[in-house]
Amino acid sequence: MKTAIYSGSFDPITKGHQDVIKKALKLVDKLIILIIENSNKKCWFTLEERKHMIELTVGDNPDIEIASSDGLLVDFMKERGVEVIIRGLRAVADYEYELVYAFFNNELSGGVVDTVFIPASRQFMYLSSSGAREAAIAKARLDIFVDEKIIDIVENKVEDLYPDKK
Image (cartoon, rainbow, N blue to C red; front, side, top):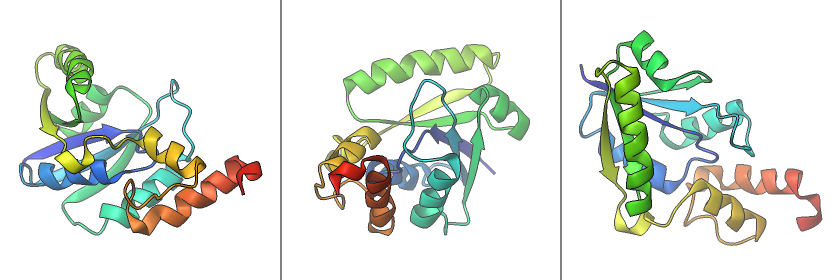
C-alpha cells in the first residue's frame, strides 16, 4: 500500500487543499493529512479546530488519516514508514519555495523522502488560507474559498478575533 503525506497548517483548509487531496488520492492508497504546528505562523485556529474542519470536509474518506506534528516532517515520516510528500503548487513562486523544501527533506531523510508536486486546478490557483481569512474579515463570500461545511466556523472565528467587525 502506497502512503503519502500532505502537510500544512490548514488554517483553514481551503477548496484548493481539497483539490490537491482529491488528486493525491488518485496516486496513493492512503493519504495522511498532517497538520504542522509552525511556531513562525500565527494561526487563527487551534490544532483541534483545524483538525475538526479537515474532518468535516474530507474526513469521511477511509483512505485519509488526519494527524498532527510539531517536529520535523521527515522524523514523522520515518516513524510512519512514509517516503512520499505531496505538495500543491499554485504558481511559479510556489514551485521555487517548495523545491527548496523538497531538496531539504530529501537530504534530511538520507535520500529516502521524495516530493510529488500537484498543480492546482485553474479555479483554485488563487486560493490560500490567508486569502480566505482576509475575505472572512471583510465579510466577503467565503463559499469560493472554503467548503460550505466550515463557513460558519470561519465566520464565528472572525467574530471572536475581531469583535469590532460584527
